[in-house]
Image (cartoon, rainbow over all chains, first blue to last red):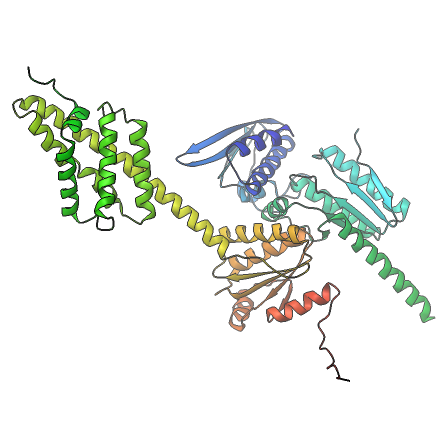
Length: 117
Length: 131
Length: 281
């Protein structure tokens, strides 16, 4: 769970408020768990954003696991195939300003989230 | 393996979560608490999370599970000391922990448990008086 | 021997008085500066010319002093409610006096005059762009600050009694406002060690499913912090719409703030009683 510290540092640097920091760290924690549990492990990259006067953090999670057959279902709150509450993907989307997912069955999944100040 | 210590205070069990929980530690805590409730005959479980900077759905589920098990074993679970940012995030996440009682701090939480113990005591006396 | 072909700062230095006079005349013709007194305008013009004299004259190199000056002018005008045209027009109207001065300086050398004219207009245009940039940025800052002030003003959290808070909501409850309400309320719960919170929605015009969702989120968050919520002030029409929409707020709800307070007092072990009249001995 080292990802939390790294995301926290990046969020702090981007000047996010305490609540926004907590939201993006929690979202990252959900996605990291997904990557480990369902994707069989993968990697995350964190990027600091600057656009005009706005600052933010973007995190990309990538795995080469089985992929998600039905993305719409997976995004529904409460949908789960694992041992969680089925709030990982839907929750991460709820907690981010930007959310996108690219997945292919048998190839893997990439989820991108961002939170702006 | 690290285990989180469980303290017994009167009819209550007190757990203070100080660090980011690793998944295995969280699972161990769930099991230890269930055993302790029965062994100690506890009527309440107080979980202090004031040190936690984030609570994700995994920890949320652990808290809900503990509350569920405790209820079946006739004990109340009170989660105390949640930080405002954590509460807002949990609600956005869609996790409002309906089965879990809450209190602002450990003192209030303990009062909640004691009141319940006192009430159940009264009820018992009352029931005895009916005969 | 003829003077060296003076660059812009030289020309400004040599013809400062005429340029200043002419600039002020152009500005007064434009009529856009009526909000400033003649003395204020003169001071600003003078400051710009002073800074120009110091700068090396290239379009790229704008001296720190000039930069600071532009920032100050834009800030002043932004807070006084000037428009973009007025603010940028102030600088652009310097062009004509400058070009005139160049014409007089190089009357016998049209080629030089042309080159200098071009350079000076480029410089003024560059400065005008910078001024506009700074002006827009200042205006944006003002707007953001005002938005925050409005959001905070419209969502006060008041203490009614020891451990009892009230949030009188007025106006529409959208998601960004819900965030502010939640943050203020939860912080107040911590600061005041509150056990009860009354959310009064007398001033909320409509409650649709979305607003109800926002209310429920706020209530859920307060509960996670250990504080119970009461909703008060649901007007009859709103109650009807909510029922028709199938919206249910599964919380204690009271018709008025007064009843909610009485309930909260009761829940926290207090009671409101009528005092027996004291009989004078």
